Image (cartoon, rainbow, N blue to C red; front, side):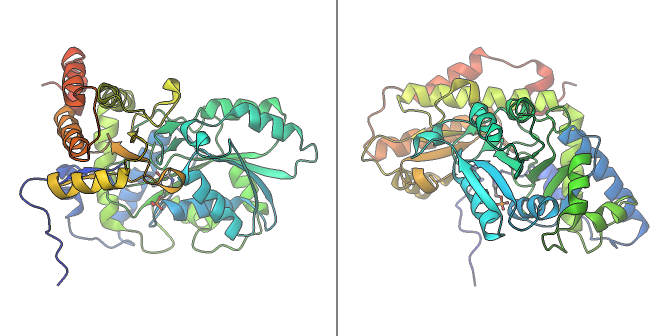
Length: 409
Ligand SMILES: *Cc1c(COP(=O)(O)O)cnc(C)c1O
């Protein structure tokens, strides 16, 4: 029999940047009995979730909810709006941006990848000027969409989506703007309508604090118009049928009912606290973790302070130290999972997640696991990151109202 209870006593420290630790409140909500997805209660649940998700995406327009991982919602965004052979512009900020690019190519879309060569681009966000420049070289408007990642989970670098919108507008180009915020939604500031995004792609298992298995497309009227002319083959992902039946809160197929209970609870928590409170909490956690990394004297993967991700921090290990060997020690000795270096940065860095069911002490504990693991791996540290994080969190109390998301009584 597969042994799934392989962790020792206490909670496992799931410090990867998604799936994030799921709050007990959400796990309990998901344990309720499954209901009839064609029955009266389901319609009410569906309508509530669609309204709540609009609030979280900050949009007035429809949000598709798919029983699929984020990759499915990536595909949905492309096949609903494009036609075979269409040209799209993408931007390599890290592993996830390159995976979306590969997915587009497999669909028969002519995808072009901008960005810095080598691993250097994996320390930066999207350079909107490069996008504007490229669009200006396309007077015939053969480029149908610009696709970027908002929170690059492989590096811990965010990108300025409003600047990308301005770049497209400055070039007076009609391309659609598609954004992946699979790991940014409900933990980093995001504004679908205000930033003029046409399709936003997201997923359940990161900022939304749910298990994997659910993903989203937030639409714009322009995206819906484009979908009427798109000729790429689609059936399961097709927006048209979904848009119609969603009006009454239902789905064309069996949705993942119990994950929807979880989503309902997550929305109550997030919207109950207020999105701004949720964003500030993650920013503060990021500051605390980075104070720790700086005290160790190790470089942070994100090279631009203005673009630090509030959701995760990438820690670069010194030349000659295999980051995955350090992660292995931390996992085996201290029961703590850290994110691996992906693609171009494999073995060169690890990632600490600061999202989901998390608080100051969880992060201090995670940093202590890292500190012990780094020392056991022979890495010379300048000082104690744990002490620095304790100092940061002590010196920077948050107003009672936003303390770890708990409302003051
Ligand atoms: C996690 C993630 C994905 C992939 O989502 P899956 O749910 O694993 O399919 C894509 N993009 C980003 C930015 C992610 O963080």
